[in-house]
Each structure stands twice: as C-alpha cells, then as structure tokens.
Length: 112
Length: 111
Image (cartoon, rainbow over all chains, first blue to last red; front, side, top):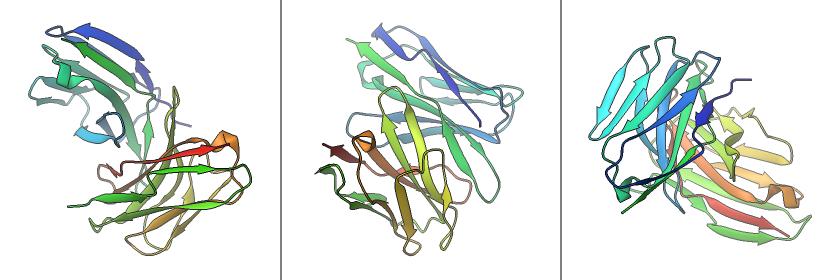
C-alpha cells in the first residue's frame, strides 16, 4: 500500500509570511499532483509534476518534485488570505488502472 | 460548463436504509472515481472505474457497490447504511492518466 505523509497538518500564519508544505513517501510515483480545496467544494487541481527534480511555478506558489519521485513540496511566498484552504498532495501510479493516493492534507489559514 | 455533477448534495439516513449517490460528468472522461473524506483521514478511494464497463475496488470498498451505467455516469450504492458511513462523498473523473476533476460532494449523515 502506497502512503503519502503530508506535513504540517495545520498551519496558521499572518499575511505576508512564507510557508512550505511537504509531501513524503517511501514509494515512487509516476506523477504528483497538488490540489486545493475550499469549504463545501471539491478539490481543484493546482499543478501536476511528472519528472524527478521538476520545479513549477504558479504565481506565488512553487512546486517541486523530488529527484527520486518520492516526495514533493509546495512553497507559498507572501501568503494572502485568499490562499486559505486545504492543500492536498496526491501521487499517481498504475498504467491503464491509473489511480491517485492522497495525503491527509494541510489546512492553511492566512490571517489578515 | 457543469464538469462533474453529484446528487444529492445532502442526505440524512437511518441505520439500515439504502440509497444511491449519483454522479455524472460531461467531459468525455474514461475514468471515474468515488472517494470518501473524513476529518483527519484525507480522501480515501472507495471504488473506481478505469473505463466504461469496468469497476475495481479501492482502499475502503466494504459496505458499498458501484455501477458504471455508461461513460457519463457512475453511481455509488449503500445497501444497508451504517453510522460509520457518515462522511462527505466525492465523485471525480479523469482521462486515463490525467488530473482528476471533482464534484462538490454529497454530505451524508447516518443516524
């Protein structure tokens, strides 16, 4: 069974601070996806990384896939209240039976 | 621009009752999934359907059944609801190995 450990579980910061969320596993994944979920809604995809060492930037968000494709991080620069939400990492595996293994999520609160 | 549509949005059941959660997608995706989300547990896969006509068990299939009615629709059935099945249920769809698109969930309480 593949597991993804996500840390921290909760994070409460002030507007303007930087933060990093980690997603770690002992398993190799073919891809790693990050989702953000707001209350009362389903998760929404932020980014997919597929190559070991890959770095993707989405405005103030920077995503990195580890060289061995077992871990990933999400860094937010100068956080804003609009960044508040549940951040989920998900590792993809399998060919024709492709499915995702989700981490338990990081609940981020950015206070104004 | 509906994406993934789940019905109902809310439901309260008594222990032992049965019900079917409906899910439909309009993105012509091959794969569809059912998850449950519980506090502190993240999203756990119940069943998935890699393509029309096939279904497979996920991490937590006990107490559930699914039907891939056609390419668009994938339903989840609780035959005899138990309080442990109180949860938020999400349906998702994707191309074979693409990112998943989620519905807004069904909030199910079993008394």
